[in-house]
Length: 475
View: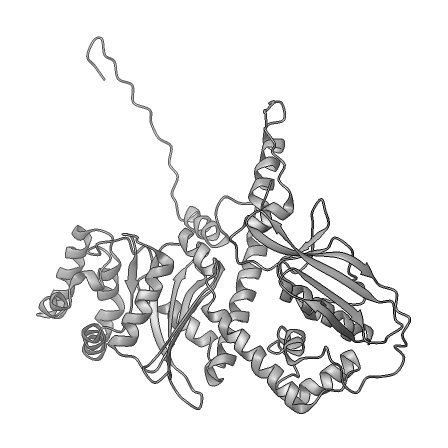
C-alpha cells in the first residue's frame, strides 16, 4: 500500500466481505524507493524511515527543534539540504564549525574550536538513477563552551535566516513584516544578533521564494496571473482544490458576476459560483482584473474552462448581457405587476406548451412584448427554451450573496483580500464537510425539508386495482 486510497480499499474489503477469502499478492517496496521514484511535488515535512535509516526529501528548517538530532545513516535528497540542516543545528546549539573538505563526493565538517571533538562526514551515494547524501560518520560530543552568546555566527547566512522565517512571514498576525522585526525575532528565538542588512537580504529572498510558488505546478489549487509587456500586473486567477473536486458533483449552472474593488488602486473582482446539493453557495473561482472588458472576461472564462473541463452540460447564468439588463429594466418600469407574476412564471416553466400559454397571457396584458423578448432570445432567460438543464437556478442571486459576503474584503489590498477569501472558503468547506459527515438521511437537509413540506400538500386517496380478463375478453 502506497497511499490512502489503498488503505481505504483494504478497509472496504475487510468490512464488507467478512466471509470471503481474497488472495492478495503483496510486493514490498522500500519507502526510499517510492520517494526517489516519485514525481510528486509534495514536500515531506518529517523524516521517512527506510530499512537503512531516515530519508529527508525536504525539510521545514523552522521546525528543527531541540528534539531533532542527526544520526548515522541519515539520508538527504540533496547536498544543500544536508548543509542547511547542519547550519540550523549549529545555530540552535550555539556553536560554529568549519568545512574541512567539500566536493561532489564528500563533505567533512569540524567544530571551529580546535580541541572540540564534534565532527561529521557525509558522502554521496548512488541509489537507482539518483544521488543522495548519507551521513556516514558523526561524533556529536562537544567539549567547547556554548554558554557565551555569539555576536555573529558564521553559519547564520542570509539563506539560512530566509529558511527560518519563510513559512512564518505571511502567517496571520505575523510580526515579521520589516527587517527590524526579523532582527528581533532571530535574537529572541535563537539568541543571535544579526545585522540589519542580513535581515533585509533574508526577507527579500523569502519573498522571492514565495512568489516562485505561484509558478510551481500543483495537483491541487490553480493559480495563474498575467502581466503586460512592461511587467506590470494585469490579471490574477485563483481556485482552491476543494472547488475543483467539488464542482464535479454539482449542478453546473454557473453564475458569473463582477464587483468593484474599493482599495487604493481600484480594479474589479470577477467570480464564478454554483449552488451545491444543499442550495448553498459553492464558490468556484475568483479573478482580479483591471476592469470589466472583453479581454478580461475572455481570460477569466478560459481559466475557468481549465478547471471545469470539456463538458456539454454547463450553463452560464449572468446579468451582464446589456440587452437583457435593458429589457428587464423597461419591463419593471412599465409593467411591474406583470413582471412580478406572469413574466417570472413564464421564464420558470419547464416545457414549451406551458411557456406559450404564459406568453399569451403576457401578450394580452402587454401587446408587442413577445417581439421584444424574442429579439433577446428566449434561451437566455427561459427555462423551457434553454438548450441545457438550468434546474432551479434562474437568477444570479448566489453571485449577489457571494458579493455581500466579500463586502469588507473588497476594501483590502489585493494580497490581503485573497487571503481573506481563502480563509472564508476554507471555513465554509470545513463546516459543510462536518455537516455532511453527520448526515444520516439519503438527501441533503434542504431537500429533505422541501420533500416534507410537499408531502403535507399531497392529497391521498384510495385507488382501485383494475382486473383484466384475457379469456374471455372482458374487463
